[in-house]
Amino acid sequence: MDYHNKNIMYNGKFLSVIKRDGWEYVQRNTNTGDVVSITAITKDNEIILVEQYRIPVDCYVIENPAGLLGDINKNETPIECAKKELLEETGYISNNWEYVFTTPKSPGLISECSIHFIARDCEKIEDGGGVDNEKILVHKVQLDNIRNYFKELKDNNILVSSGIYAGLYFL
Image (cartoon, rainbow, N blue to C red; front, side, top):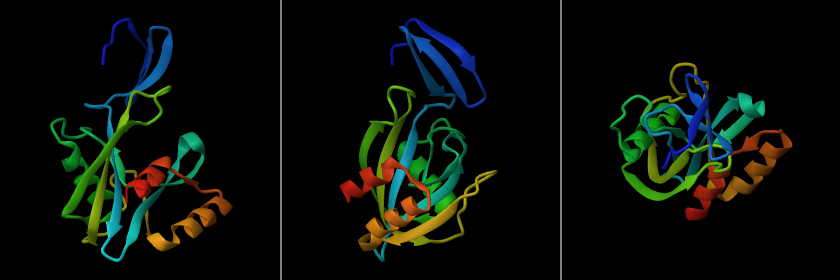
């Protein structure tokens, strides 16, 4: 990315606000600034989702397992990060991985891209739930019941991350 005329307006622990060529946007202060996201499917045809309270939207959000690329190990590859995050957040592993796409998250606001994988035949080997202060709840939903599940979430004012829909499309 060309950073000519880049002015850092604010530099925090995790984020910076940048002004470049008259445009203001947010940039993560990690080694890559990108994230990995995983559509994880069990051998029983269940999608594995995570639920977290997200302060910026002031509610619980159902999401794909995901994490910051290079936040601890600056040399980790996207697939290494995806495997680590799937295990940390959900307690599941997979030996059947497929890279699907890379896409900007919200290109008018943040410089971050999401690198998306599908993990099939996932098996639970530990509890999951995240690390440090993460309070992640793990959900498994039969794929043939996903529409009813989304309706139930909507009725309970729980948001669903758009990355889930994108991952389901590629299944």
